[in-house]
Length: 182
Length: 182
DNA sequence: CTGTCAATTGACACAGTGTCAAGAAAAGGA
DNA sequence: TCCTTTTCTTGACACTGTGTCAATTGACAG
Image (cartoon, rainbow over all chains, first blue to last red):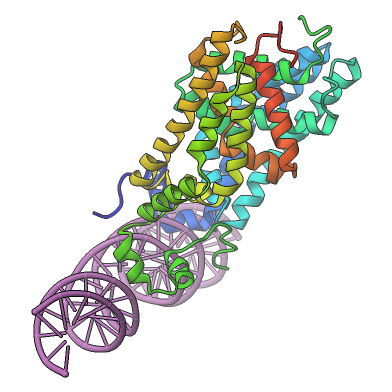
C-alpha cells in the first residue's frame, strides 16, 4: 500500500486545474507555493475586511467590551481562513518563506491582543496575576487557529459555543474579578 | 533556490545512521514511518512512566488538587515527548496510520481530563458554566501540545511559568469560584 | 509583418518514502 | 566443523510532488 488519504492535499496542479490553466502558468504567477498562499491570505484579508473588523473592536467603551469584540471579530474570521491557515501551518516547518509569512500574520494578531490588553490595563480591569505582556501572550494563545480547530473539529463544538466559551475563558483568566460583572 | 531549512526533518535515513544500521534494516523492523513513531511513543511512555504519573494525580484528596496534579504531570511530560509529538502532528494530515496512532494517544489524555473533571464535579467545585463533557473538552484543549509549544517557544516562557499559568487558567475557567481559594 | 507577452506542452532534477532482489555476516544447533 | 536460518547490507527502482527549463503557439499592438 502506498499513501492513504492526504487530507489537506491541495497540490499546485489541483489549483491550476481548478483555475483552468496549466500548472506551469500558475508558477508563472506564483514562483513558489508560499507565494500563492501569501497572495491568497492577502486577498482573504481584503475580501473579509479583517483589519476593519478588528479595528471596530477598538471602538468599544470599556476594556472588557473591547476584549469581547476582539474575540468575536477574530473568532468569526478563523473559519474563513481556516483552509489557508492549515496549508500554512503544514508548510511552515519545512519552508522558510511560509514560516515568515505565517509568523508575520500571527504577529499582527498578537499586536491586536496587546492593544486589547492595554485597554483592560487602562481601565484597571486587567487581572493582577499577569503582566500586560504575559496577558497578551495568553490571549494570543487562546485565540490560536489550533485551539479553534480542536474545539470545532475534534470536540464537535458549534461556532456559537466556541465563541461564548472563549470569551468567558478570556474574561476569567485576564480580567480582575472585581468589576468584571458585565 | 531549492528548499530552505527543514526544521523538524528527521528522515528515516538519519535515524538509521544514528542507530548504526542501514536504512533498509530500519524498514525491516518498522515497515513504515508511522510504525517507528508509534514504537517510539510507546517506549517513551514506559520510560517516563506516564501512566503511573497520571494515575498518581488520582490520589489527590480534592478535585482541585487533582486538577493541579494532573496538569503538573502532563505538563512536565510534554517536553519529553515534544520531538515525537511534532513528528506525529506533521504526519497526521497526510498519513492515515499516523493520524490513528496520534488520535488514540490524545484520546487517552482526554480520558484523564474527563476523570479529573468528574472529581471536580463530585466535590461540587465544577463551574456551573460548563457541563462535565464541555469542561473536559476545555481542559483537553488547554493541555494541547500546540499550546505548550506556542507559549514555550513562540512566547519564550519558562516551563515553570507555563505550568503556573496553565494551572491558574484551568482553575479560573473550570472551578466554581466559591471555595476555589486553595 | 514583427516584436512582445502570456500560456502551453513536455522533459527533467531533486528529495524522501517505501519496495525488491541478491548477496554477506553472524548465530546457533547437530 | 559444517549447515541452516535469521539478520543486515548494498544497490537499484517506483512513486509523488515541487520547482526549473526550453521550445512552441496564439493573441494583440504598433
